[in-house]
Image (cartoon, rainbow, N blue to C red):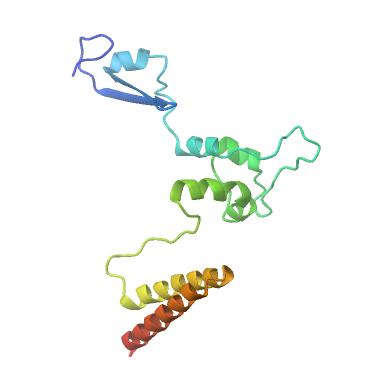
Length: 169
């Protein structure tokens, strides 16, 4: 494939830019890529920059009621996190939860880390996780006063506990 710009040399640099749903592709040779003003080869893509743009403060900093959120463990301010896209410690997740949870939920579809499990996970661990998930669903059903659903979940929990006990024997 020839360079889109000079049409002389082979394109070995492929650049895709998407802004507001409009995609623009460029296939450039090395020389044209370094000369292109839209492409900053000295400042590569950073996932931290992407994250910092996703989190907006819900408070107007000009307001007299505005108070900067600061992590009580590491001292990181939310405004510094917005600039860097990097959290300082594990406690930052709790301290900045009001801003982090909606964005994480939007990206993952949930905001509870489930972790990964190896394919050959022991049946006991799978059953224990299944029981935990069923118990959470049971609590939710009771809170919503969905007693028929709660009864079904209760029975499923009993079955899962029986299977777990059989595996352990």
